Length: 472
Ligand SMILES: [Zn+2]
Image 1: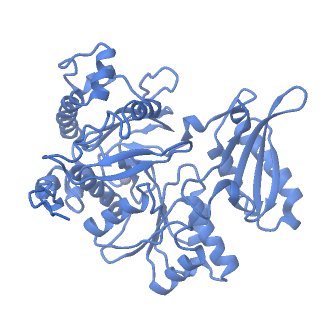
Image 2: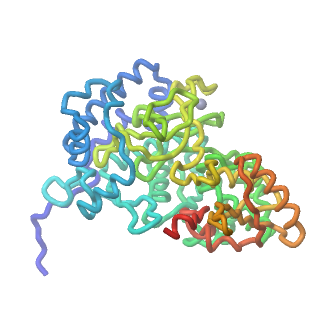
Image 3: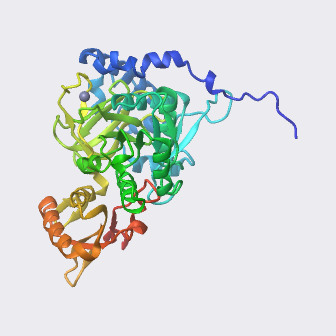
């Protein structure tokens, strides 16, 4: 074999001006003295400068150029941040179409692959529930800024240098565990312990690791945090509260935070991020809304039907605009997560606006006899009942001669023989109160739903099967 000695191998260390990046997007602790407390007018000016640069970049990327031109826009039409509403939003269906038309990466990345000016790239994917997962490429600028934004989150939520952090997050195609590792290793000085989900390291072993290595902090998703606590308590006879875990970093949404905190005797912090855009908003220790990293992203909340931008306090779907991404930026990406903006003024003193928790995914919403039901809301009602371990699965179907829409909620009970009847009755009443529609509760034994949900194995947990759709 001949070695081609003339090849240019792109080097990570030469791919970025790291000092300049840290000035632009300060990591902690500089973050706390700058962006975190920046007066609103200065923040707005910074956003506008970055926004206009992003728009110029957008015109270079075929996906945006085509869509914007079709909407009647020309370069120069977007002159200020106020003009953002002129830009047509897009959804995951549009990026999927782009990938189909221009395989394998679509025409929305704007990244040169190979060739003279190639950069070192990594690839992760968004959760594909059907077919191939959607690939996303990250340039060094994207990757490094995402790590800095993540570090702001962990610093805000009390992580310290030297903390041993259990990363019970996906180590597969998705970003989960890898983004965490980049973040805390490079910008916090904490030690990532990469156990992955239950399919990478068995849950019992994860608990032994916590105990023997003195894990300080756990990063995972709520269902697995709950699963680990219950396995420790019921299978290993270890009270999770005695393990000395100082904090849980998770994505809580509308899960029952108090119950999770009681299980572990540790605070549990919320955040909002996506595979494409990284960590965008997170709670401070006041746990009262998630501060948006406004120097790096713009989050708008829009009416899901009309697209009209909603004022603070009103719930709608989130539009993401990433100000920091050089490759594959999001520019008014309708991500279909439901939340609301909160008024400024957190007790922590930050000037960064806050996002309310994520109430659910708009495309998860089930129409049931005229009511809109989020499986996430069903989960909250289930988690309230201490006789359940919080595991549930919803099946929607048309039944009977009249083809009536019915939802059955299967719920795992810790002690099926003793509690089945009472839980069925209580929970059916509670679900009617919470959602406005009657559904059937079917208590099942512990572990029985894992084949449906995948909780013990993966972070892509399933909560719903709508047989009305799969029958079509
Ligand atoms: Zn705060």
